[in-house]
Image (cartoon, rainbow, N blue to C red):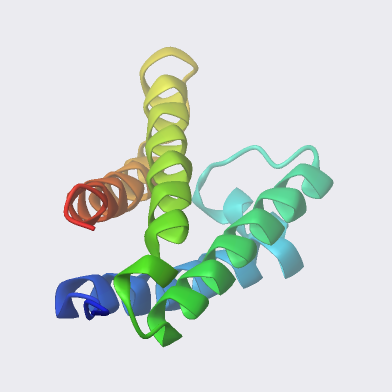
Length: 125
């Protein structure tokens, strides 16, 4: 018997799609916008690469959102756990040890929230 995807996971996928699309498109097409909040954008290509990665994970959340059962989303959720956890750690490292602008705490908190949510559902699939 196929088990349905929990509603909270569907909601997490949907929020991840929206947030990822905003940040991903922004970083891909307009990396210099980060300079407005104090981020030193010396290599726009690197920001574009990260924007592309964010959009790729947003696409995987779209597929997870469209899936019909738990088996179809297990690998997607595990990949999201890895991505969001590593991104959180990278932001924290930069904020604590490399002098990243305080505005990037917002990014760290967003990624940590996704890591917690995806981690929670990963343990229940």
